[in-house]
View 1: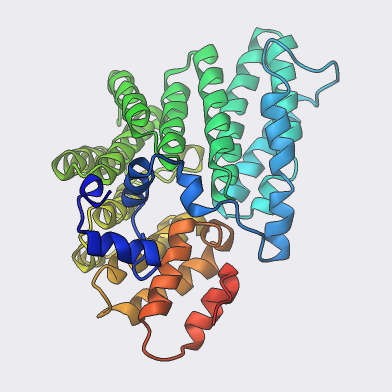
View 2 (view 1 turned 90 degrees about the vertical axis):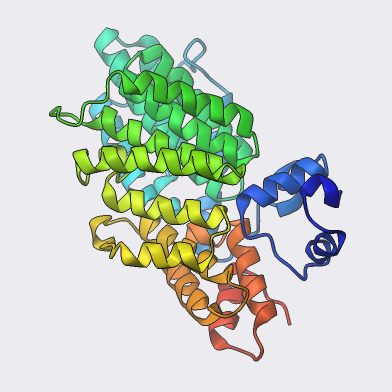
Length: 383
Protein backbone atom coordinates (compact mmCIF):
# COMPACT_ATOMS: atom_id res chain seq x y z
CA UNK A 1 0.00 0.00 0.00
CA UNK A 2 2.83 2.38 0.80
CA UNK A 3 4.33 1.61 -2.60
CA UNK A 4 1.06 2.44 -4.34
CA UNK A 5 1.02 5.78 -2.51
CA UNK A 6 4.70 6.51 -3.16
CA UNK A 7 5.61 6.84 0.51
CA UNK A 8 7.47 4.81 3.11
CA UNK A 9 5.69 2.31 5.34
CA UNK A 10 6.65 4.44 8.33
CA UNK A 11 4.94 7.53 6.89
CA UNK A 12 1.85 5.56 5.92
CA UNK A 13 1.65 4.19 9.46
CA UNK A 14 1.72 7.76 10.82
CA UNK A 15 -1.27 8.69 8.67
CA UNK A 16 -3.14 5.56 9.74
CA UNK A 17 -2.51 6.25 13.44
CA UNK A 18 -3.45 9.93 13.16
CA UNK A 19 0.08 11.11 13.97
CA UNK A 20 0.18 12.89 10.62
CA UNK A 21 -2.82 14.55 9.01
CA UNK A 22 -3.94 14.74 5.40
CA UNK A 23 -3.74 18.43 4.48
CA UNK A 24 -3.97 18.22 0.66
CA UNK A 25 -6.99 17.02 -1.28
CA UNK A 26 -4.77 15.38 -3.86
CA UNK A 27 -3.29 13.12 -1.18
CA UNK A 28 -6.76 12.33 0.16
CA UNK A 29 -7.83 11.21 -3.31
CA UNK A 30 -4.70 9.07 -3.77
CA UNK A 31 -5.27 7.36 -0.43
CA UNK A 32 -8.88 6.58 -1.35
CA UNK A 33 -7.76 5.17 -4.70
CA UNK A 34 -5.04 3.06 -3.07
CA UNK A 35 -7.48 1.58 -0.57
CA UNK A 36 -10.12 1.20 -3.31
CA UNK A 37 -12.74 3.13 -1.36
CA UNK A 38 -14.73 6.33 -1.73
CA UNK A 39 -13.31 9.60 -0.41
CA UNK A 40 -16.33 9.83 1.90
CA UNK A 41 -15.34 6.52 3.50
CA UNK A 42 -12.20 8.27 4.73
CA UNK A 43 -13.67 11.64 5.71
CA UNK A 44 -16.85 10.39 7.38
CA UNK A 45 -18.95 13.17 5.89
CA UNK A 46 -21.44 14.65 6.50
CA UNK A 47 -20.60 15.91 9.98
CA UNK A 48 -23.17 16.84 12.61
CA UNK A 49 -24.11 20.54 12.65
CA UNK A 50 -22.21 22.48 15.28
CA UNK A 51 -24.46 25.55 15.50
CA UNK A 52 -28.00 26.68 14.80
CA UNK A 53 -27.19 28.22 11.42
CA UNK A 54 -25.57 25.00 10.22
CA UNK A 55 -28.53 22.94 11.42
CA UNK A 56 -30.91 25.20 9.47
CA UNK A 57 -28.64 25.00 6.41
CA UNK A 58 -28.64 21.19 6.58
CA UNK A 59 -32.44 21.22 6.42
CA UNK A 60 -32.15 22.46 2.80
CA UNK A 61 -30.41 19.28 1.63
CA UNK A 62 -33.54 17.12 1.29
CA UNK A 63 -35.57 19.74 -0.68
CA UNK A 64 -32.58 20.21 -3.02
CA UNK A 65 -32.31 16.46 -3.51
CA UNK A 66 -36.03 16.08 -4.24
CA UNK A 67 -36.03 18.98 -6.70
CA UNK A 68 -33.15 17.41 -8.63
CA UNK A 69 -34.27 13.78 -8.53
CA UNK A 70 -38.07 13.93 -8.47
CA UNK A 71 -38.50 15.92 -11.69
CA UNK A 72 -36.67 16.97 -14.85
CA UNK A 73 -37.42 19.06 -17.94
CA UNK A 74 -39.50 16.24 -19.48
CA UNK A 75 -41.38 15.31 -16.31
CA UNK A 76 -42.46 18.19 -14.07
CA UNK A 77 -45.12 18.28 -11.35
CA UNK A 78 -48.57 19.64 -12.18
CA UNK A 79 -48.36 22.81 -10.11
CA UNK A 80 -48.08 26.54 -10.80
CA UNK A 81 -44.77 28.41 -10.80
CA UNK A 82 -44.11 31.95 -9.67
CA UNK A 83 -43.46 34.67 -12.29
CA UNK A 84 -39.97 34.53 -13.75
CA UNK A 85 -39.05 37.92 -12.33
CA UNK A 86 -39.72 36.57 -8.84
CA UNK A 87 -37.72 33.42 -9.55
CA UNK A 88 -34.84 35.50 -10.93
CA UNK A 89 -34.71 37.60 -7.75
CA UNK A 90 -34.73 34.42 -5.68
CA UNK A 91 -31.83 32.86 -7.62
CA UNK A 92 -29.72 36.02 -7.53
CA UNK A 93 -30.27 36.41 -3.80
CA UNK A 94 -29.45 32.73 -3.19
CA UNK A 95 -26.21 33.09 -5.15
CA UNK A 96 -25.31 36.24 -3.21
CA UNK A 97 -26.00 34.54 0.12
CA UNK A 98 -23.90 31.55 -1.03
CA UNK A 99 -21.01 33.93 -1.69
CA UNK A 100 -21.40 35.19 1.88
CA UNK A 101 -21.53 31.53 3.09
CA UNK A 102 -24.95 32.10 4.62
CA UNK A 103 -26.16 28.68 3.55
CA UNK A 104 -29.13 28.77 5.93
CA UNK A 105 -30.47 31.69 3.85
CA UNK A 106 -29.17 30.60 0.42
CA UNK A 107 -30.80 27.19 0.73
CA UNK A 108 -34.05 28.29 2.33
CA UNK A 109 -36.09 28.49 -0.90
CA UNK A 110 -33.69 26.69 -3.22
CA UNK A 111 -35.64 23.45 -3.60
CA UNK A 112 -38.77 25.35 -4.68
CA UNK A 113 -36.73 27.56 -7.03
CA UNK A 114 -35.19 24.53 -8.76
CA UNK A 115 -38.59 22.85 -9.16
CA UNK A 116 -40.40 25.93 -10.46
CA UNK A 117 -37.64 26.78 -12.93
CA UNK A 118 -37.96 23.29 -14.40
CA UNK A 119 -41.73 23.80 -14.70
CA UNK A 120 -41.26 27.07 -16.61
CA UNK A 121 -38.54 25.52 -18.79
CA UNK A 122 -40.93 22.72 -19.68
CA UNK A 123 -44.16 24.70 -20.16
CA UNK A 124 -43.28 28.33 -20.99
CA UNK A 125 -42.87 29.95 -24.37
CA UNK A 126 -39.43 29.98 -26.02
CA UNK A 127 -38.23 33.20 -24.36
CA UNK A 128 -39.45 32.02 -20.95
CA UNK A 129 -37.81 28.63 -21.42
CA UNK A 130 -34.45 30.17 -22.24
CA UNK A 131 -34.55 32.50 -19.27
CA UNK A 132 -35.62 29.68 -16.95
CA UNK A 133 -32.77 27.47 -18.20
CA UNK A 134 -30.25 30.26 -17.63
CA UNK A 135 -31.49 30.78 -14.07
CA UNK A 136 -31.53 27.01 -13.48
CA UNK A 137 -27.83 26.77 -14.37
CA UNK A 138 -27.06 29.47 -11.79
CA UNK A 139 -29.34 27.87 -9.18
CA UNK A 140 -27.60 24.53 -9.68
CA UNK A 141 -24.28 26.20 -8.84
CA UNK A 142 -25.78 27.27 -5.51
CA UNK A 143 -27.17 23.76 -4.93
CA UNK A 144 -23.79 22.23 -5.81
CA UNK A 145 -21.83 24.45 -3.44
CA UNK A 146 -24.22 24.15 -0.49
CA UNK A 147 -24.40 20.36 -0.87
CA UNK A 148 -20.66 19.93 -1.30
CA UNK A 149 -19.68 22.27 1.51
CA UNK A 150 -22.14 20.72 3.98
CA UNK A 151 -20.67 17.26 3.39
CA UNK A 152 -22.86 15.90 0.58
CA UNK A 153 -20.45 16.08 -2.39
CA UNK A 154 -22.21 13.31 -4.33
CA UNK A 155 -25.42 15.35 -4.30
CA UNK A 156 -23.25 18.30 -5.33
CA UNK A 157 -22.12 16.37 -8.40
CA UNK A 158 -25.76 15.61 -9.25
CA UNK A 159 -26.64 19.30 -8.97
CA UNK A 160 -23.72 20.17 -11.25
CA UNK A 161 -24.71 17.44 -13.71
CA UNK A 162 -28.25 18.82 -13.91
CA UNK A 163 -26.86 22.31 -14.42
CA UNK A 164 -24.69 21.04 -17.27
CA UNK A 165 -27.71 19.36 -18.87
CA UNK A 166 -29.64 22.63 -18.72
CA UNK A 167 -26.72 24.54 -20.23
CA UNK A 168 -26.52 22.09 -23.13
CA UNK A 169 -30.25 22.49 -23.68
CA UNK A 170 -29.84 26.28 -23.61
CA UNK A 171 -26.89 26.35 -26.01
CA UNK A 172 -25.37 29.59 -24.69
CA UNK A 173 -21.54 29.25 -24.85
CA UNK A 174 -20.81 31.21 -21.66
CA UNK A 175 -23.37 29.33 -19.56
CA UNK A 176 -22.19 26.02 -21.00
CA UNK A 177 -18.60 26.85 -20.07
CA UNK A 178 -19.77 27.94 -16.62
CA UNK A 179 -21.62 24.66 -16.08
CA UNK A 180 -18.65 22.60 -17.29
CA UNK A 181 -16.49 24.52 -14.82
CA UNK A 182 -18.44 23.77 -11.67
CA UNK A 183 -19.25 20.23 -12.85
CA UNK A 184 -15.49 19.61 -13.01
CA UNK A 185 -15.08 21.03 -9.50
CA UNK A 186 -17.76 18.65 -8.26
CA UNK A 187 -16.05 15.66 -9.88
CA UNK A 188 -12.72 16.66 -8.35
CA UNK A 189 -14.32 16.79 -4.90
CA UNK A 190 -15.20 13.09 -5.10
CA UNK A 191 -11.89 12.09 -6.71
CA UNK A 192 -13.13 11.66 -10.32
CA UNK A 193 -10.10 13.45 -11.78
CA UNK A 194 -10.11 11.80 -15.21
CA UNK A 195 -13.59 13.01 -16.05
CA UNK A 196 -12.99 16.38 -14.40
CA UNK A 197 -9.92 16.95 -16.59
CA UNK A 198 -11.92 16.01 -19.68
CA UNK A 199 -14.71 18.46 -18.78
CA UNK A 200 -12.20 21.25 -18.21
CA UNK A 201 -10.35 20.58 -21.46
CA UNK A 202 -13.61 20.57 -23.41
CA UNK A 203 -14.67 23.80 -21.75
CA UNK A 204 -11.38 25.55 -22.53
CA UNK A 205 -11.53 24.41 -26.16
CA UNK A 206 -15.04 25.78 -26.64
CA UNK A 207 -14.54 29.00 -24.67
CA UNK A 208 -11.27 29.93 -26.37
CA UNK A 209 -13.19 30.68 -29.54
CA UNK A 210 -15.58 33.12 -27.87
CA UNK A 211 -13.40 34.67 -25.15
CA UNK A 212 -12.99 38.38 -25.91
CA UNK A 213 -11.61 40.56 -23.08
CA UNK A 214 -12.43 43.72 -25.04
CA UNK A 215 -16.13 42.90 -25.41
CA UNK A 216 -18.77 44.83 -23.48
CA UNK A 217 -19.84 41.57 -21.84
CA UNK A 218 -16.74 39.70 -20.61
CA UNK A 219 -18.56 36.77 -18.99
CA UNK A 220 -17.26 34.31 -21.59
CA UNK A 221 -13.70 35.50 -21.00
CA UNK A 222 -14.14 35.26 -17.23
CA UNK A 223 -15.35 31.67 -17.58
CA UNK A 224 -12.38 30.90 -19.86
CA UNK A 225 -10.07 32.18 -17.11
CA UNK A 226 -11.87 30.19 -14.40
CA UNK A 227 -11.51 27.02 -16.47
CA UNK A 228 -7.75 27.57 -16.63
CA UNK A 229 -7.57 28.23 -12.89
CA UNK A 230 -9.43 25.01 -12.15
CA UNK A 231 -7.29 23.11 -14.64
CA UNK A 232 -4.26 24.35 -12.69
CA UNK A 233 -5.80 23.07 -9.47
CA UNK A 234 -6.64 19.69 -11.02
CA UNK A 235 -3.08 19.34 -12.35
CA UNK A 236 -1.62 20.27 -8.95
CA UNK A 237 -3.69 17.61 -7.21
CA UNK A 238 -2.42 14.99 -9.64
CA UNK A 239 1.21 16.07 -9.27
CA UNK A 240 1.71 17.80 -12.66
CA UNK A 241 3.41 21.01 -11.58
CA UNK A 242 4.45 22.22 -15.06
CA UNK A 243 0.91 21.80 -16.38
CA UNK A 244 -0.49 23.61 -13.34
CA UNK A 245 1.81 26.59 -13.78
CA UNK A 246 1.01 26.75 -17.50
CA UNK A 247 -2.72 27.05 -16.78
CA UNK A 248 -2.07 29.63 -14.07
CA UNK A 249 -0.03 31.73 -16.49
CA UNK A 250 -2.84 31.72 -19.07
CA UNK A 251 -5.41 32.67 -16.43
CA UNK A 252 -3.19 35.53 -15.26
CA UNK A 253 -2.74 36.81 -18.82
CA UNK A 254 -6.51 36.73 -19.25
CA UNK A 255 -7.13 38.51 -15.94
CA UNK A 256 -4.66 41.24 -16.84
CA UNK A 257 -6.92 42.08 -19.79
CA UNK A 258 -10.31 41.76 -18.11
CA UNK A 259 -9.40 43.46 -14.84
CA UNK A 260 -11.47 42.73 -11.74
CA UNK A 261 -14.84 41.21 -12.70
CA UNK A 262 -17.61 39.37 -10.88
CA UNK A 263 -19.79 37.58 -13.41
CA UNK A 264 -22.17 35.14 -11.70
CA UNK A 265 -20.52 36.04 -8.36
CA UNK A 266 -17.22 34.29 -9.25
CA UNK A 267 -14.81 37.24 -8.81
CA UNK A 268 -12.51 36.50 -11.74
CA UNK A 269 -9.58 38.91 -12.05
CA UNK A 270 -5.98 39.42 -10.95
CA UNK A 271 -6.86 39.14 -7.24
CA UNK A 272 -8.61 35.81 -7.67
CA UNK A 273 -5.73 34.52 -9.78
CA UNK A 274 -3.39 35.32 -6.88
CA UNK A 275 -5.71 33.42 -4.52
CA UNK A 276 -5.86 30.37 -6.78
CA UNK A 277 -2.06 30.49 -7.18
CA UNK A 278 -1.78 30.10 -3.42
CA UNK A 279 -4.19 27.14 -3.48
CA UNK A 280 -2.20 25.48 -6.26
CA UNK A 281 1.04 26.05 -4.36
CA UNK A 282 -0.42 24.34 -1.29
CA UNK A 283 -1.54 21.33 -3.32
CA UNK A 284 1.95 21.09 -4.81
CA UNK A 285 3.38 21.03 -1.28
CA UNK A 286 5.30 24.30 -1.68
CA UNK A 287 4.52 25.31 1.91
CA UNK A 288 5.66 28.66 3.25
CA UNK A 289 7.23 29.46 -0.12
CA UNK A 290 3.74 29.61 -1.62
CA UNK A 291 2.62 31.83 1.26
CA UNK A 292 5.55 34.20 0.78
CA UNK A 293 4.86 34.51 -2.96
CA UNK A 294 1.23 35.29 -2.16
CA UNK A 295 2.28 37.85 0.45
CA UNK A 296 4.48 39.62 -2.11
CA UNK A 297 1.42 39.99 -4.35
CA UNK A 298 0.13 42.52 -1.79
CA UNK A 299 -3.43 41.36 -2.42
CA UNK A 300 -6.27 43.67 -1.41
CA UNK A 301 -8.93 41.26 -0.13
CA UNK A 302 -11.49 44.09 -0.07
CA UNK A 303 -11.69 43.65 -3.85
CA UNK A 304 -13.65 40.45 -3.29
CA UNK A 305 -16.47 41.73 -1.04
CA UNK A 306 -16.93 38.01 -0.46
CA UNK A 307 -16.53 36.13 2.84
CA UNK A 308 -16.35 32.97 0.74
CA UNK A 309 -13.21 34.11 -1.10
CA UNK A 310 -11.63 35.91 1.87
CA UNK A 311 -12.13 32.85 4.06
CA UNK A 312 -10.58 30.62 1.39
CA UNK A 313 -7.54 32.93 1.17
CA UNK A 314 -6.81 32.76 4.90
CA UNK A 315 -7.50 29.02 4.97
CA UNK A 316 -4.96 28.36 2.23
CA UNK A 317 -2.47 30.65 3.97
CA UNK A 318 -2.88 28.52 7.08
CA UNK A 319 -2.38 25.30 5.10
CA UNK A 320 0.72 26.69 3.40
CA UNK A 321 2.31 27.77 6.68
CA UNK A 322 1.44 24.48 8.37
CA UNK A 323 3.34 22.58 5.67
CA UNK A 324 6.54 23.99 7.19
CA UNK A 325 6.33 21.35 9.92
CA UNK A 326 5.72 23.54 12.94
CA UNK A 327 7.93 26.58 12.60
CA UNK A 328 5.09 28.81 11.39
CA UNK A 329 2.25 27.24 13.37
CA UNK A 330 1.32 30.38 15.31
CA UNK A 331 0.75 32.26 12.06
CA UNK A 332 -1.10 29.25 10.66
CA UNK A 333 -3.44 29.20 13.68
CA UNK A 334 -4.08 32.92 13.28
CA UNK A 335 -5.02 32.59 9.62
CA UNK A 336 -7.16 29.51 10.24
CA UNK A 337 -9.01 31.34 13.00
CA UNK A 338 -9.71 34.28 10.64
CA UNK A 339 -10.91 31.86 7.95
CA UNK A 340 -13.23 30.01 10.32
CA UNK A 341 -14.72 33.25 11.63
CA UNK A 342 -15.11 34.73 8.14
CA UNK A 343 -16.72 31.71 6.43
CA UNK A 344 -17.77 29.33 9.23
CA UNK A 345 -20.23 27.21 7.29
CA UNK A 346 -17.69 26.57 4.55
CA UNK A 347 -14.80 25.78 6.91
CA UNK A 348 -16.49 23.91 9.75
CA UNK A 349 -17.65 21.11 7.47
CA UNK A 350 -14.46 20.84 5.41
CA UNK A 351 -12.61 17.57 6.14
CA UNK A 352 -9.19 19.03 5.29
CA UNK A 353 -9.83 22.06 7.53
CA UNK A 354 -10.75 19.70 10.36
CA UNK A 355 -7.55 17.73 9.74
CA UNK A 356 -5.60 20.99 9.88
CA UNK A 357 -7.09 21.87 13.28
CA UNK A 358 -6.07 18.45 14.61
CA UNK A 359 -2.59 18.68 13.07
CA UNK A 360 -1.94 22.06 14.65
CA UNK A 361 -3.41 20.90 17.96
CA UNK A 362 -1.25 17.76 17.94
CA UNK A 363 1.92 19.79 17.35
CA UNK A 364 1.20 22.41 20.02
CA UNK A 365 3.59 22.19 22.98
CA UNK A 366 1.14 23.73 25.42
CA UNK A 367 -2.57 24.39 25.77
CA UNK A 368 -3.74 27.32 23.64
CA UNK A 369 -7.10 29.03 23.90
CA UNK A 370 -7.05 29.68 20.14
CA UNK A 371 -6.88 25.94 19.45
CA UNK A 372 -9.51 25.22 22.11
CA UNK A 373 -11.79 27.72 20.37
CA UNK A 374 -11.15 26.19 16.94
CA UNK A 375 -11.85 22.67 18.22
CA UNK A 376 -15.13 23.82 19.73
CA UNK A 377 -16.24 25.61 16.57
CA UNK A 378 -15.36 22.60 14.43
CA UNK A 379 -17.05 20.19 16.82
CA UNK A 380 -13.73 18.50 17.62
CA UNK A 381 -13.97 18.43 21.40
CA UNK A 382 -11.09 16.14 22.33
CA UNK A 383 -8.82 16.16 25.38
